[in-house]
Image 1 (cartoon, rainbow, N blue to C red):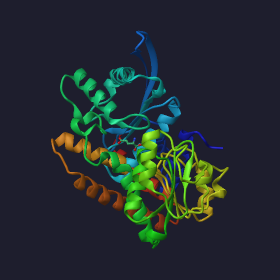
Image 2: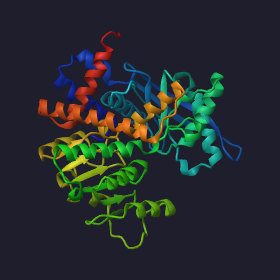
Image 3: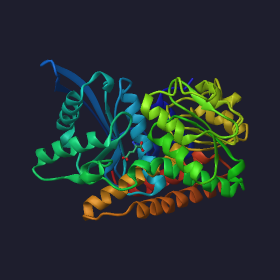
Image 4: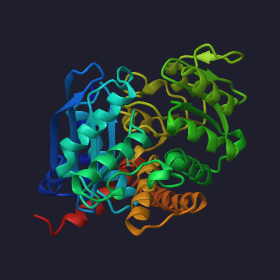
Length: 411
Ligand code: GLU
């Protein structure tokens, strides 16, 4: 069973590479990250002790521009995961056609065990440890799981101190007052709904009759639910890590998000019907939107999926074995590298504004996102139809071709 994220990414690249007719040496150049940095760094704790933490930055490919991708703070961070995630960033940036390569990093830490001061100390110390390998035209990190705009602000400040001048464009996802971009927070969820609208167009779905189940109520799931409802789709389920709220006639998205914000959990919410997260995945809905974790649809439950379409908003929620089963069942899935690419596209817009001293309005940003993601969907869909393949392979074909073309003269 393929549950190792890096192994999954290698299979996905090989499948698409074979269809493109890439040579072994061309494939070899894009499978492994160009550099993986592992650091051990000290952090001063509130009790006066100095604790040592481990962190990573994987730089997969920079043929099309600086490495780009998030930093996650989580107890589950490991080398295989950051390597896979950095590779996915390369393909994501290429599919969305933003001029970046792929990077990803993280620190092994449970942020719930840290005070705010300790979190700040850890963020700053990690930046000191990786300062040599990042920079606005080298590698531009951003928030990811359990990292926020405030953390990016601390990181920019620390990096700026090291190099002796303000370097806003070294990190994206910063707060609005500190060089962040309008629309960046909602970008990923918004882009997912652009994909949903495109899908309804090509499949001639009527939004009012299109039921949508969303796994995950983090930043991505929340904004997906809000925009989907705004565009007239029928959101019927939304979950957090413990439970899911379901109503086949539609759920009150705003009330659920508010309850989650106030209580930190959906457990105990009055006047709603609960189902398990596993049951959410198996609902007879039109569109299923896994927006939380990797590997939630595997060979063990793929047969039981009843949705007609899947939009991957998390990174890597379907395993390659699940892909095969779903494709055979005629379920169309839109891959993460396309459906959640509005996040990094929003980051590109932030980086661009920082580099050019500009400030765009939220409307500007959302319109530009709509154009970019809409065109990426059209190109992916055409590639899928022309090659009689699944949408993941089609998007990888587009991305790999772009990266391979950019690498032709590099050896
Ligand atoms: N962490 C986000 C992702 O996985 C965004 C990365 C970025 O904006 O650089 O796409």
